[in-house]
Amino acid sequence: MNPSLSSRLQSVLARAGQIVAFTGAGISAESGVPTFRGADGIWKKMRPEELASMNGFLANPALVWEWYQHRRTIIHTVRPNAGHEALVAMEALFGRVTVVTQNIDNLHRRAGSSSVIELHGNIERNYCLGCGEQYGGETVPLANRIPTCPRCGGLIRPDVVWFGEMLPEDAWEEAVRACGSADLLISVGTSGVVYPAASLPVAAKHAGAFLLEVNPEPTSLTPLADEYLCGPAGSILPLLVDQIRRLRTGALHEH
Ligand code: OAD
Image (cartoon, rainbow, N blue to C red; front, side, top):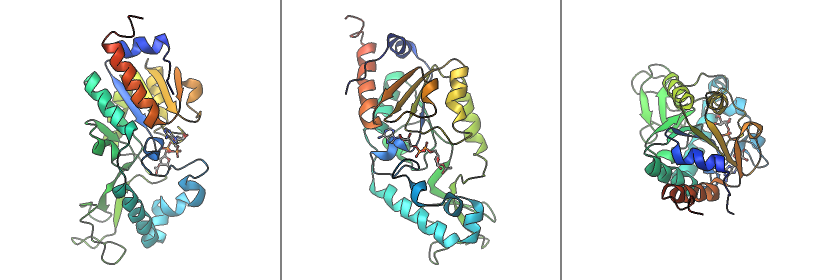
């Protein structure tokens, strides 16, 4: 597979200063982390209102904890893949790539991306509903399946965004700023249907960014994309990095 890049994209890549990678579950699929939608998606088998909402948590905290511990176990046994690594390589080439992710799996940080904005939280963190005390994934007191806060006795919950909840304000504001000033926004592995996150690539495009999409399936963002590279992130992003390298050394201009 060899994505042939339009001359417009080549010229954007040659001079882009501000690059944002907007990522979703698809970038972690090749690591072995399941996506949410599609034939084998999590939401095909599980009910988000039971597992990913405050009402669901309060109704059955043990079930929600069991599910998050199961997902933690998966995340701890997998590794960042060539897609995550390509974004790190891109950062080395451009000086900075801001990763705005909907993923909670921590794989961008583990891969080595240095500027990661997490819109939906991080599964490695937890906090107490009573007093707000933060607990790491390893320190959460799990003795009785429903962890409670040693300080105040409150229920501890994963520090992730559930349906019906606001996005963390700082992360959202940072993401809006980064997308508003991007020259190039690369949307990778997201169906682009969950708001407000999905409004970011649209806003970036309206503010003048070139919108490049990488996904094996067309999505709701595809009609808006300036260029769509069809295929898995673990193959397409490394090829993109190769092309950027060649562009920046002038090799592509010589032909
Ligand atoms: P989805 O499961 O909705 O979409 C995953 C996307 O990844 C689809 O468009 C797939 O075609 C694509 N995909 C699959 N394999 C891929 C690969 N190897 N390389 C690149 N793309 C691939 O996941 P998200 O868009 O991330 O929210 O979902 C958004 C939010 O919905 C999640 O953050 C989560 C969920 O409910 C919360 O939990 C708040």
